[in-house]
Image 1 (tube, helix red, strand yellow):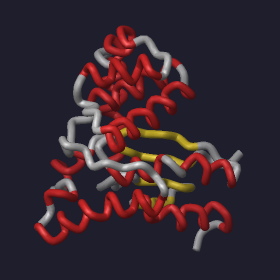
Image 2: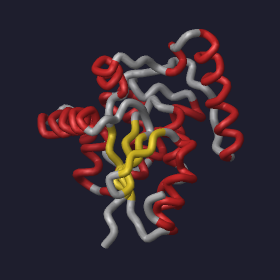
Image 3: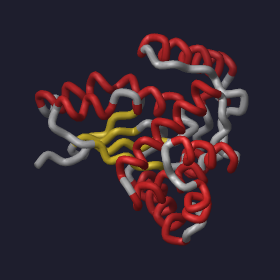
Image 4: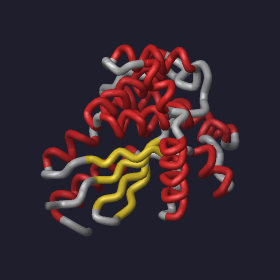
Length: 201
């Protein structure tokens, strides 16, 4: 059986949000599944010397702020730039991992709900009450989720994933691996699909 597509993401990444809306559809067309793997861009940036796209030199920062919205319109995905950006996504990532340990489908539902909440409804995922509401909205127990994100195993799992992403050369999100080949950015989805369809090029 073909290996899963690895989808490395951060909940504060607009381009991760855009790509997350299409990656499962692309995978299904080619008989693949998606392995969703959270990482933390803040840690990656401290390691690599990177910065959020909106904190680059002014011409680039202004371009990316505009491109987030234009790219969303092009993709037909609702987008409203968050009033607080970027945010800490440690707890959101832990919430995803805890849900994943309980129910994979529920975790993926949380992923999509969380991305849409932050990037189209301006709900700050770094706030505990926002995660509680998201959990309740997908049918998860908010109290259990709040406990789950504090479990040592969940914290260790996130740390291991962040370390793995850095070791494998991830420098931004989304980063997608297909059969070991690395693609960065939602705009590489056409290349991902070509690779899936015909193999290396």
